Image (cartoon, rainbow, N blue to C red; front, top):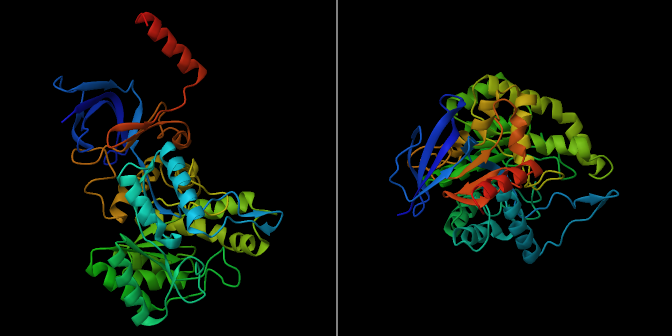
Length: 420
């Protein structure tokens, strides 16, 4: 066992809702887990000591809603769709590229909620074997949709309770971690609206029962209010998007312990950057729904409904770089959260929603040492999470922040003092 003491850090404590200074944590590099934390310098009986120089340390960013086989920058040009090939090879190539971008930007764990050809399952294996860089992956394989429904192009089309049961059982046989259901229509498919209910309550309930029998989670793409209520009533673990939440919906969430994954940047990015590139039929749906979407998330957060950060990464102008951190900023600016509450959405709340809180989501003994380190305080300015930062996975530095000219000059001065 190799023990590393990361000392002289300001470590985020979600219970205290702040960064606590003059802290240390000791990591066992064999297991990749934290074995001790505390105040001060920590014990001397370690194999290596790393001075964090007062940096602000928080758990790695968790993103509960991604599509790693998609690239968000090619979608439409001059009003014409210009997507990549639908081949397995292209989808795999983009997934590997997105994984690298994600880890470089501090995203250490993702829940992928729909991948063509079940590619996320193979990507998960590659990441675990160290064949590719990237965040740890919770898989869903192909999303479930009705025939011709939202995501039908790359999803698994099922109709009726019997087909749903067979499909979910087959997906679990393949080894998925989560079941993704397209319960309503959405923005990025023509001919449907967010209010269209595509799976009925019996179909959704059948999927939930089968998944929960095997200890799997269920994530439901639901946008219109009736679809949101339907999904929450039958016990899905998370509702994705949730455009229109009323008091009845809040009561249902409380009763069933439902978590919301807002994906606010998916809407905001199309609204801000999609004019003349994203088709007008899609952008008009955004314009109609964006204000009530943001108001719904504000209402849910104020009511104490759990919010887990997710971006819908892979949609137009919404990728795998700084967008996850920007989603956190949107929760502060558009949903009324404090910076600490917003940090919790991407750490402990995500871990709980994904049912991995025993090992992820906070800096504490027994948890994996996945963390990011910043030179500025995100509580004072939530946007600093978007900037360059050091990224650690299983206690090992996997991305070092690009040094500024001032940093380089200071480093050179330190080396000269040390005679190097």
